[in-house]
Image 1 (cartoon, one colour):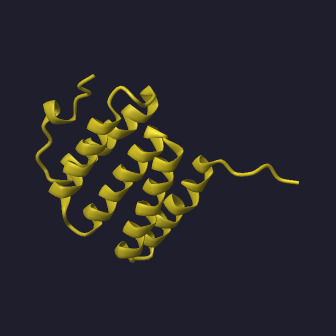
Image 2: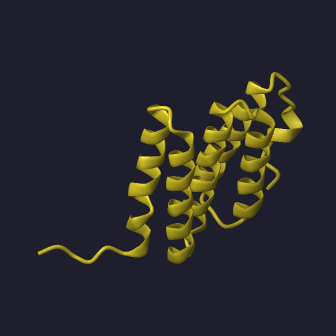
Length: 116
């Protein structure tokens, strides 16, 4: 017999599906999967999962050639997660923002430096 799944575990399948959809070239489906992941994260009241799913959507924007919007989305995720997520998630978000900035070929150290 299996234990019931908490709301947190419902975030994982949509996030994985989002990456798979992005890998096979269906960005719209990917975006929608990440939206479901964000909804599950909100229901679970888990700021780390919400920040993760939000930042993952930035990769969809990046694949579509919208590097500036991607960087803005990760910056938004970092701002929303400030003081609410573990150090490892903060580090990953900073790395994701640096990746977006690098894709714009205008890396600004102050823009990606952790502000907390």
